[in-house]
Length: 94
Image: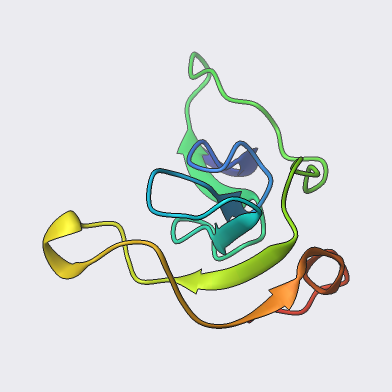
C-alpha cells in the first residue's frame, strides 16, 4: 500500500461543511480534513479515489466558523467568531 493525497469526501475538497445546523451564508471548517480539502489515505492498486489537486471553491458562503463537532449528542453547528470566506481562501482559520 502507498499513501496518497486524496480529496476529502466529507467536504468534497472545499475544506468547508454546510449541513442542517449552519445558517444561510455560514459554513464550518471541515472536521475531517481541518479545512485543507485534502486527506492522506492508504491505497492499494485496486482502490478508487480522487487525487487531490487543489482546494475547491464553495458557493453561497460568506462567513466561516469553527464547528462544534459532528455528533448531535454533543452539539453541532458553528461556534465562536467567524472570518470572511475570502480570509479562509487566503489561508486563515477562525
